[in-house]
Amino acid sequence: MSQKVVQYQAVMQLAQANPSIYDMVELNKQMLEVLGVKNIDKLIPAGDEAKPTDPISENMNLLNGKPLKAFIYQDHEAHLQVHMSFKDDPMLAQIAGQSPRAVQINAALEAHIAEHLAYQYRKEMEEQLGVPLPAPDERLPEEVELEVSRLAAEAGAKLLRKNQAQIAQQQAQAEMQNPLTQIQMRELAIKERETEIKANKTAADIEMEKQRLEVEKQRIDSQERIAGANLGAKAVSEKNKLASEQLVQGTKLGIEAVQKNKEIQLKERKE
Image 1 (cartoon, rainbow, N blue to C red):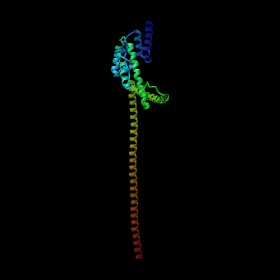
Image 2: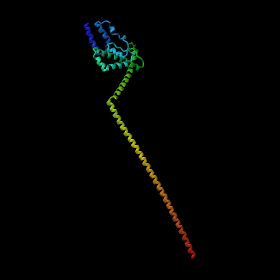
Image 3: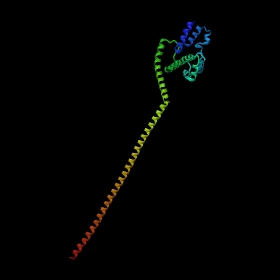
Image 4: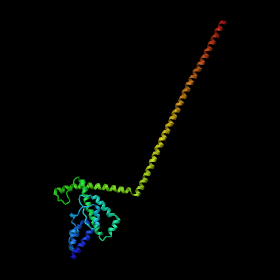
């Protein structure tokens, strides 16, 4: 029996290092059998007899050394969030780490998280496929298994792209919360605003210059019209003056001609 106990202790150490590949419940049952413990089924209920419960109760059962089991219908995403918060809580981790069962608690938690993660993966694959998958323990005919495999390949690629996009978005959001990134973004916004102000000022200057040139053009046009009017009036005035002078000169010449004609007639009469 001593030899068997040593062997099982070695297996237990391996299982604690790699809990995901061992059936911890069955391993503990066999260890208890070797030790000759009675009523093992009462100490370690069979997995099928375990009752589904909420994630808080699961964490409590974990601390109390009770077995944990995930069920296919549960909200695995919510369970995972609660279990990961429990795992990452520094206060709880410090207290649990002081327990003599600390290694077993961590191993059982990792195994239970993996169980929920497996069910969550199955649920997401079903969403990509658009149809429910057969039960995990159901033996499938060869043609059905082949068809499921082909469909799963395409669904797996879609799920990969979806998760990659989600992780990229989360990383971008986290980067946006980085104080250094926020400072750089504010500096960039200031530079863009300065560039915009300069561009607007240049546009305003151009518009003002256009308006000034338009006013100047109108002023020149007005001066040209005034000068043209003055020239026209002067030309008319000169023309009128010339006509008046010609009229006076003609009148004078006409009077002189009449007087001369009278003198000639008077002279002829005297002769």
